[in-house]
Image 1 (tube, rainbow, N blue to C red):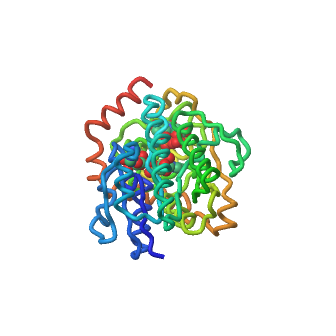
Image 2: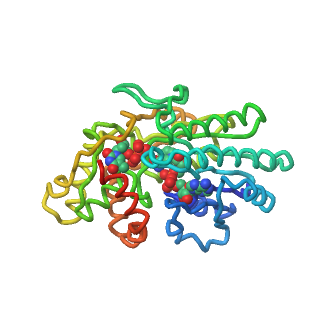
Image 3: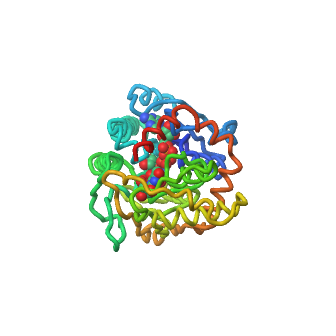
Length: 351
Ligand code: NAD
Ligand code: TYD
């Protein structure tokens, strides 16, 4: 099969790993990456593959219906992997409407245009929607999210992703549109924008700045290395069943405070600092509004049906992630200017 795949949000964190994986593993495919290049989109993430002959980047916004119509007219897509989104919970608390526009209206536009296109082009085989475990809400101390857990989103981010998931499933049931979905736990790894916990802490430790820990640091997340997620996306795109959802997780739950302490130890070693130096940077700050206590994924369905397992253990993954940030100071420097300083100040100065 010679696919022509539209990837949305390919200049972001997870999207850039997916674009690279598909370009490298499937040189016979054509990959068209559209991205609005919001604050989180960064073409430096894809510098190493930008000149590949089977790759095209187009700057564009999924909220722009006319842009999408022209795009589908020009390219005879066989499939679509949809990652474009506003993705940070704290930003969704301060600016919810952007999330509703991109995550809900943008997804609706893509579904509509792709469905209209498919009516005339039987070669369109797959609409793959990437989502998050946050749609399931917050767990207590026990239990795991399965594909059958009822939706209970509690932040504007997770509610907008839940809305987009519902739309995708509605297109399957109503039009027999060939969708597939996955809901994944927290990703970490190279190229993640330093607003999310792990890269923010790495950057602050490098700069000997305080590490803001929300509340008492007792919230729990299930962490997955981004390359492991990209491998799951590859499998689901090729082998997932139409209409199905796959939960993807790291089977790797950590309390925020324990995670930060481990990161501090790793960084003290790498930066040749006396043990305990980085831990002294930890500062407990005002909690996030509506902070979900715990996320944890049951990924037995993708394990048994598609034979997927996370490969990298957390300590190695964290160590490799730190190495990447230490080696890619230029990447960070280009981000840590005007917009980021303003954002950081707004989020953290009053906590
Ligand atoms: P990210 O914020 O790093 O990247 C999002 C990308 O989408 C950026 O390149 C941005 O420019 C682009 N974008 C934003 N609005 C757009 C628009 N209107 N039109 C076109 N492009 C637009 O996010 P990420 O962490 O890479 O997440 C990618 C996807 O995976 C999202 O759908 C997110 O909900 C989902 N997800 C993320 C995680 C995680 O831990 N990061 C976990 C599970 C699921
Ligand atoms: P984050 O990386 O924003 O992912 P999400 O909220 O989507 O799970 O946050 C991960 C956890 O870390 C979450 O419980 C909130 C917490 N956190 C902090 O304690 N301090 C911070 O500065 C940030 C960004 C997050």
